[in-house]
Amino acid sequence: MGKELLIVIGWLYALLAIILGIYSSNMLFMTFQYWALRFRKRVRPPAESILPPAIELDPWPIVTIQLPLYNEQQVARRLIDAVACLDYPADRLHIQVLDDSNDDTREIVAERVAYWSSKGIWITDHHRESRAEFKAGALREGLDSTPGEFIAIFDADFVPPADWVKRALAPFYEPGSEKIGLVQTRWSHINEEFSILTRAQALAIDAHFGIEQTVRFQTGLFMSFNGSGGIWRRNCIEDAGNWRGSTLSEDLDLSYRAQLRGWKIAYLPDLTAPAEVPPFMAGFKRQQFRWTKGTIQVARLLAGSLLRAPVSPWVKVQGLIQLTNYVAHPMMLLLLVLTLPMTLWGGQVFRQFNLGWLGVISLGPPLFYTTAQAAVFDGAHRWGRLLRLPFLVMLGVGIAVNNSRAVFEALIGKRSAFERTPKTGLTRGLRAVGNLRKEKIKIDTLTWVELILCLYASVNAILWLQRDNWIGAVFFALYAAGFAWVALETLWESLDISRLIRVVLTLFQ
Image (cartoon, rainbow, N blue to C red; front, side):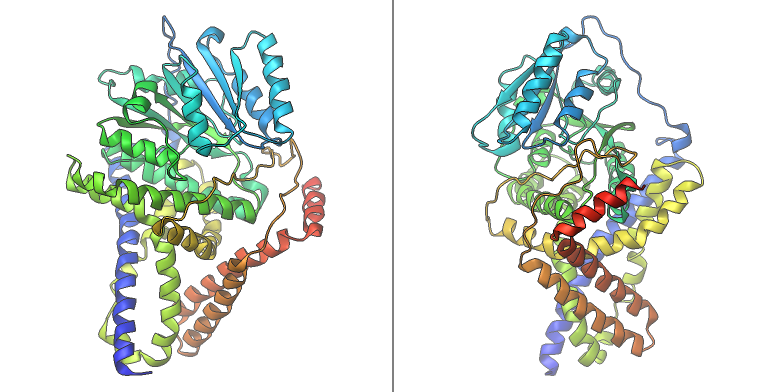
């Protein structure tokens, strides 16, 4: 390979490594910032966590609970029943079931709405024949037909505790809270122990809520609505321009538009909203694709407004990092592809670019996820959860192909439907409320790309092992394992026999 080409590859390699280093160093910053907040007593350790008070008001404000559904027959009953049992005056709590379904969910919803209406619960069923603008369209149309002053939203897989509304309302009634437009609560996990996949996802979600959301809230940075488990001030939604379906992340879009209008987001880390994490790889990939593409779409729409906003440069930088963090996935893939020629022919070039300092920055992710366990859990068992960290690393690598396609489609402006994440109705005891069936899985080209990259990463691992570089060998072995896990589980789930085996295994747990 020509020296000039190797130098070009070397420069590109160095640039990618530096950009990835920026995102990694931000995780390191978030970790240090969290411990600084703990040291200054602005954040309590889990052992000292205190639920926000369940307020008592006279008169009570009208609260609307919006439940957007689309073909959720496995969990619709559980969700509606849980929300109908919320501890709040029945004549001041309006439950809106926003049902776009075209399957048996419609009959389930109609039956539960009729049942709870007969019990004196204010609950209404809103069915749309068209899924215009998907979830955003349903939320906007629902808002037009409710008098609610506060609007809470729960996706189909959530099971809110009875005291959730009264506790989530508390920040809106604190002194100086007039500009609080949203209160976000922390997600917990109903089915965390179902599999290695769900345990790894739980680790990532706990880090987002335990560290990132906490630091962003406590330091006045822009933060995101997570799409569920939050309650909005109606005036904020309307002032920010209401829900719009121009992106797949309508939650992030509205929360940033609201903050650009001067509204604030409060975060309650001690109040949880239990929910499912996707128990199967196909559902996880679908969810990740939607989150990734939607986030980059929001970045395209709002990055300019953020840069022009009358906020501090640091708030702008942190906002841009949050809106663009998914670009790390295509960069990871390109870095992997460039590593082999650099390893075989670019030894001198490698030394020329001396990137050893990136080793310190690479500590960002492991410290971030380790700290999250101390932020969310109490007791010695929290450290045992760190055994899941290698699986989270593998999952983060293995999903990179799926998420890279999402980034690319968002950058070129390709539109796509809002594809729901399949739900199973699993409880903490892993007994299905519905059943463990999975929707039919279509194997696409990306699965084979993942397998090819598994082989490619394995070659890199072997080459580094031959050079007695054990750290590099382990690094690329994790890459190979991640691609293999995601690809092979996707293939396995496509086989009907795997469904039967999953059901049998669950019955014996």
